[in-house]
Image (cartoon, rainbow, N blue to C red; front, side, top):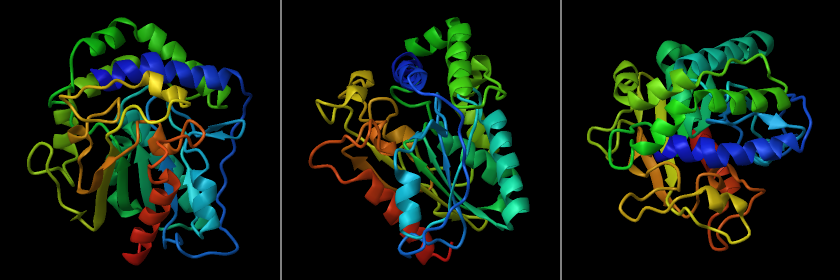
Length: 309
């Protein structure tokens, strides 16, 4: 399965290389800008990293400059710290615990969850088990449905046969990001990736009515949105392009197909971004003519603000 293999074998390796050049630990604290109101949502925005991800490592954000930019436009932003390699249930429980801690510490009633890649499916878990805490779920190129073209195949076998390596990479990222205590479980991740329909049956809110279609925008008081990129190669100076694969038969961002990313209301699935561009990496390099990922996050925050969220 391209999403898993290439992200672990290439993107994951790249993340580890970057991580090993930096030191830990990580600190995430809520902050609100003194000026600006464009992105000032009623409920805090929570950024949720994907597979082989981290909150930040010695100041290097997974969502590069996204939190700071949103805060400068009035948003309250929190950054989740989850297992780099695990299934959505485990990661979801970790996220739920953090939301409950933030709620107890700061009195927040609900949260706007924004998840990149597996962060999007992890957010859906929390929306399903604790809907009273969630105002909205926005997924950015999340692998919601891997049953379609390009969803599964030989690469998944690599992950299954190399679980010890995958767990080692996940543990390394956890260690350098200051979260060595978080469990890594490639076997659990593999099971979810080969049974996405089971997960979707358990948490169907926002599910498209047809494959590659759209789902309901609002279910049970929670708003669901999804976006995706469709350009694997975007900038000759961007090393992340080397981790992306071009498949003309299956449009996608180099790791996740466009159709697999659809969930809830599809805002756009043709951004000229690859999988790392979507969280403004590597270091903000994108196609010269592409819209800024930072502008997307601001606009989405403004959309949520206008909805009273």
